[in-house]
Length: 414
Image (tube, rainbow, N blue to C red):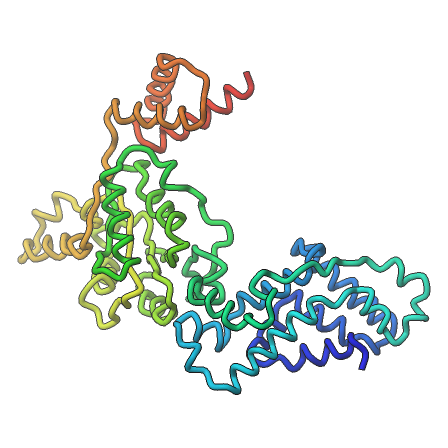
């Protein structure tokens, strides 16, 4: 049997890693191999489709790296067991199947386009057109696939450290259409780029580190004035500690009722998850805050040990109140008030990010200017920052960042 036909047969018989055949590029590659005995138009069409997909994925210069990386991030019986440190419970037959699959994936990834062409049944009919077919570089497998003798142990260690499937590939996710979907390009903000509010940010960091260390930790509410860095703090914490196994799923406020379904999907995943609810607030008529109360405490759906809730809000008590609420016709008005306030009380940690005064605002501006190495006098920087804040209705860290960005652009053009 020629190498191309053998490669097609080997791919079709994948077992534990059979799921990679559903991936677009891998499927196109398999279909190309299966065309080894097909008429020239079918073969040429399969070749063109495969190469087009390689170019779309920017992997025409390293196909082996792409294919083995696809396998590396595949979620299957082995990767799930290894991520949970249970791979030793797999029986010998399964281990042998895993070893064979990994051997097959590595082997077929290194099959050169010249070999495929030379094994094509109607190679002579292609004539000089064969020379014009675009070529790809096989490249090299990812490092986890380099040493065949140690490949199972190497992959098991990778899954234990990084998780499996999309939780190994991505750090940020969003709950959408009752599914957890990855965010390929999350906000890259870092803790080091956030200025001032060290005490507040330190409380959230300490709580997160306790969570990652398996120590008792609390759901966290970051509340206060707009533009003070509440959401940025949460996103920066993810970027700082994702290598420690931290992942984040953003849950829209209008999907709070689906929280039990969300945590059911991640309860068995070895990574630690922060469920992020941004800009949380409720009107007095909006009774969906009762769903959040049940999520935090009191509901039948218990929050798993690998999950915390971090929410941001411009309101300390989250639910909007009016004087009429306190003087209305409710017979048990005190009970109503207590019900409203009890929501924020269910966060074990509440951290206040209040609007900065002039000195704190300028301190942030100066720190950002130093970081950007802007050549401007203190007096000019001060007056410009104050004027900018007045134009935008008040001082805040967000205002400071916007001013420095505008100033940097202006100086670069001068």
